[in-house]
Image (cartoon, rainbow, N blue to C red; front, side, top):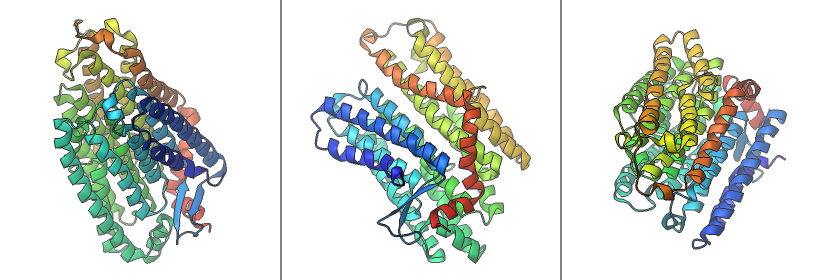
Length: 493
């Protein structure tokens, strides 16, 4: 079972390579994609249970022992994120059957989605800082295709900005890795942590920590590096938006969490305080955007920025309770964001518009869609006992315990803004006077609703079953609070 953690990377990789040779066979592509996604999800769940029972799992690629070779590491945090990503990808693939269109399906849509999953799962699994960059690039190259596939005017315009920002970010990533290697002489994350502990606190390490924050902040859309996200995420179709909004920014947040807990902990008075300030401003900017727009896609997109701020605030507090809240809230936000994007995609498909002012009365004809959206909205806002409540509560309690009163208050107030923004969608889209929409009878509402409903059900179970999840989340947090657990597992000391 030691090679089990390779399967969530290997299955989508082999599937993507296979699907490239079947561009004209849409039905075969769909069937293979679903079977592959189910297989990846099953392998991820088995991996999660294995890590829970047997501890951190590692694979030394090419049989080169750490820290000299490339090491894949699956701790509980990594396994949780890989499982969540696999579930979301399965739901998006199912949603795509009736929404993405055959023109995009014939243009290698499904293999590119599989390549994206390889990059995301690889970033969550690697134990090597340079290979984190490599998996970032796999993820980004797939996203470049997905953001432009279809070739609409807005996609072509926004793709230029998206690619330019990420190319610059990738160049900075390589520079940061080179600087870190010049100081510590290693690329293995566990070994880097040990060597930094040996050489002590050097000013150059603080500079490198800030440089990595810029790199990961660009990926995760932290203020002031979020400027590219609203336009770039608005451009592609809803299934692609659901993948981007739920997965890509979380890879950036995960990278900050992993690096700042494992080896950039030497100057917390500066680096973590800087991260906390940026997190607070990120929340405020996201709140302003979420209440300013009447476009359903932009409202949820700005809620992505709010969530990034909340998560990075939890990282900046850097206590066991705040880390636990950050882990819990990350899983919650990935699931709920994907669900909301898929559900508003159904609304847009029925009404033919993104503008809330042109919608209304959907509850009368589509009550199942309306109530599902309302549950997802309450979960996003953190209404107990749904999944958003527990994570945000732990983050706020951790902040208050450390005296971060302003940040904790901002996080609490942001919940009200989030609730207002999603209820605004519900009240205008579902409760206003009914309207007639051309061609709505021909829309496959039930088949489009089901994948989003699956994710909402997962969110409900995650929230209601918080007590069951607590030992798993606690185990994931242990390796963040006590880096020696991670180091010993990787270096076999």
